[in-house]
Image (cartoon, rainbow, N blue to C red; front, side, top):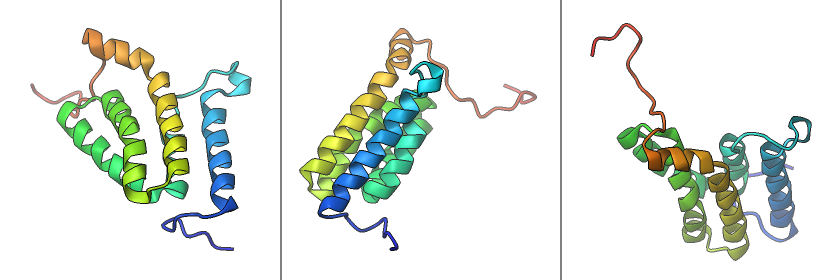
Length: 137
């Protein structure tokens, strides 16, 4: 069976994909052999979203790129993209189940960024610099 990532899943298939995808993100964020500490789940979530809500992912990827280009803060771009996710899902798919699950994924991603949020508020968060070590300023 070939899965078309651009087609909206229907029936029981959507629920199986949602459960599997959310389990993958939870497993990455709370890895048992790392004493239930893991990453922030952004890249893992992107992989899951590519399979579940491809068009919403493309929308939030655009948000991420624009915000990162303007601010050079990866964390800020990730937080705003996560916040945008359930809205993009609702606008494109008009599906409550997908919107609720993507809202849960977004809330988890934002929660995992709480340290970054504190640094952003204090003005101590690191920016990405595109200047090389030998570049003159």
